Image 1 (cartoon, rainbow, N blue to C red):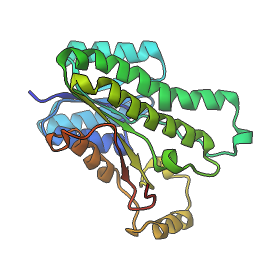
Image 2: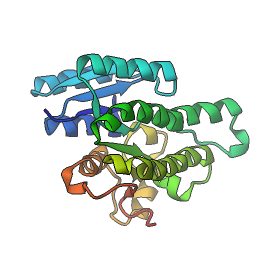
Image 3: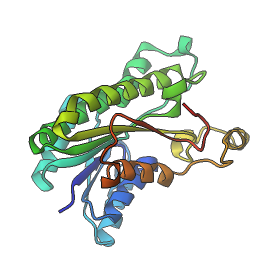
Image 4: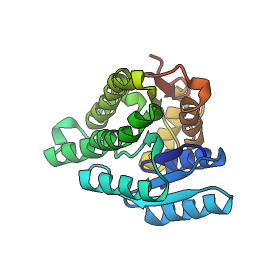
Length: 245
């Protein structure tokens, strides 16, 4: 049986596309959601109807007790997690001087604490089994920063640092840890942008198009495949050339 895959924030966008991609390859998938219960359960039903195995579990990954309960439920129904995709995130666009401490903490809670908590739980199984894959979803703004997105950029830079350090820590145990850094992707997270804004961003992208959730999902699947068996601690930019580092 193929490894069970947990994708956090899987009720829409990149997370949902990733769940569908892994399910199409025969992996049992767990779709974590926080507020998108209806979408997550509909996706799980869709995967079941196509002959796959899927489980939707609600949890706020920034809360230790909810993350722990999610892994308990996964263990009870599907066993251990062999692939973890830390995708859950929230975004804030604001001047740093206008960001409240509560907004700072809550954004770090989801974007960074969630990665820490889910990785810590998943590693308990991976270390015992001497193998596994973790892919963290960062952003190109975590690589280069963005004006009016200092908070979001800071959280995504933290994810990159955690990825590289953890890859060194668990590499001797046969566990690979990598990161994808998406560019401008056509998801709900960018729904606040006007058509004119999106047109400008499209023109600034060397490939002259916006990315799709499926573009990112395929990069994640690749990093968890045997084809990437000698790749760890890396940041794969999926941005159409918008940022080259």
